[in-house]
Length: 377
Image (cartoon, rainbow, N blue to C red; front, side, top):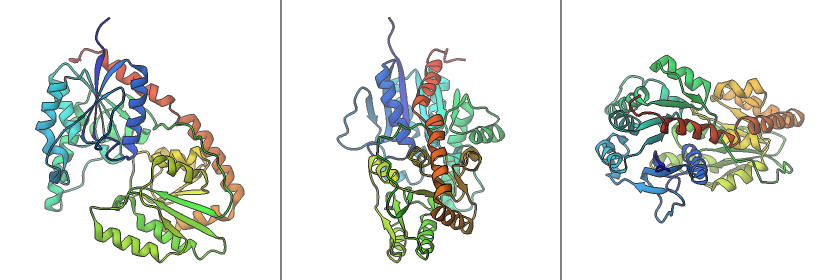
């Protein structure tokens, strides 16, 4: 019996350092890979939490100048190449589009290795707009590293058919597979009693537009119905003045509560008791919060994001495009429990069907297929 194939998971942050959507998906994948035992799993990352003890896989944390990270991951290029040459993986699985995508693809093209890149955001497969400032020059360089990887990776996995369309339109490639994000089935008791709860979950970034939800909470405060609005997400420590201005606005809305960052288990418990989930992001990949909400019978009202048009097509939420329409739809669902409950039921059926952890096995099959191929193909 030969040695196990060596699989390198490459992502900028380990979930012990920062838990976003991509980190959570990778955490679930690694758990399944370790349980299956068919790969020797190495996790190569830029940042990991102090004291984290990996179980069943090896965690390798690169070191570098943290102050340069705000400009881009391309500063890590030579260091990352050294690490890859040291660990000599048979397959690289890379997620989160950045300079690491290009570096990993370059390494895989030169050695006995295959690379699978997993799209994490629509922005990953959209060209960058023009350079308007010196800071955009760094973003342009980071994008060039990424685009090299998009073109050279042996296989690309998309989250949605829309991402596959962008990939083909802008890079003349088709995804090897479209695999929706996956979550475990809920174990919480779903009680929708008491006051109407509207929940927003995201780390505070301009792309997520938290100010739009604050405005929504303010306007909902004028209704005769009692509505509680809850915001969850890590504060913007990198922009303290912006964060303070948001918190000052929140303080002026009596029925709005900001809980800060919360563990995933607590977020799921809150969603299990929620009536409505609101997303105000300009752009996403496939929001894990949509799946978490749907699985707990919570319809989604989104300002801009509707992956593959599923909200409207499946009748499990609304995509509004304008603030005024978003407010109108939220009020409609506050005042129409029959419509809201029907949407919630459909949402859970859809999530159980399309986003269970059965999807992990499909992703693992892509990795196994790559590990059996000649690297030169």
